[in-house]
Amino acid sequence: MARTSHIKRRGAVYQAQLAVPADLQETLGRKTMDRSLRTKDPEEAKRRVLDVLKEWRDLFANTRRDKALGIEQRAWP
Image (cartoon, rainbow, N blue to C red; front, side, top):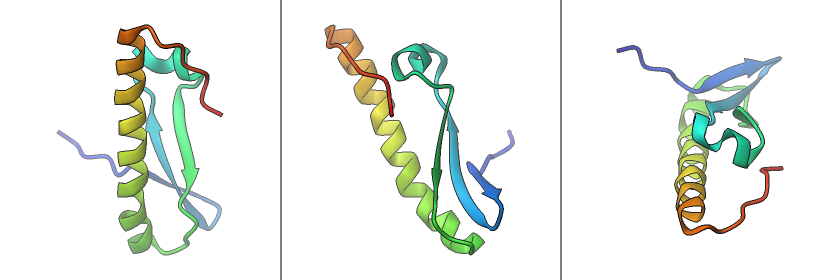
């Protein structure tokens, strides 16, 4: 199985990118999550992306929990 890094380069700066799971796309109002890692250094980007991915995966888990409890969720900004 191929590993993906969830890092892409936009110009000189690296960004984190992660696909939103299909069951959450309508709730979050988007298909992908993107955020600048604010670095031009690829090694620093590899370190920073881990925290961003954890934040997003926590968001996905919390959104699923809220949906199961019937709590209304607003779209991600």
